[in-house]
Length: 148
Image (cartoon, rainbow, N blue to C red; front, side):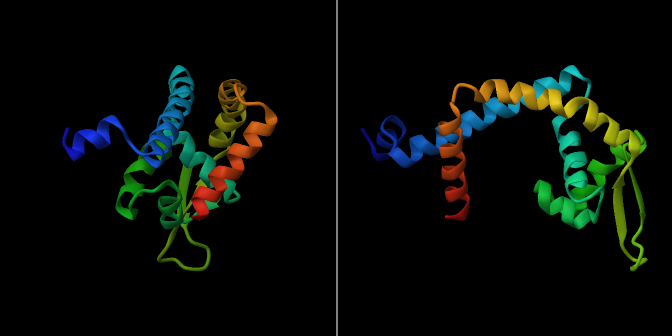
């Protein structure tokens, strides 16, 4: 065998752990995305609304782009359909007219209030394979990984 085959056939503990984490995350994201699709929505669009609400209902596009991991140029493309659907609106920044702020509308908030609890129930059902102690342990471990 060559070194590449060795790594593919007998990956290190760190590599196996990394891919197990990626696969578990992908599975949970898929559960969430299937729920949103069943409601004729997209998880990506909902995430934008959630991030705006977490900031109190109004956010700068540059901050939102950073929070969801896209470029400043791409954030505008993501916001247009939400704005067209009446789920958010753009306005001039109150103290700096050169900037724009994004605000969630009442309709956007209603969608979150109506659907977010059920989506979270679907995820919670999948998380029940871990007892409370295991979930806390996993949370601690993931926090440790993020800091490392």
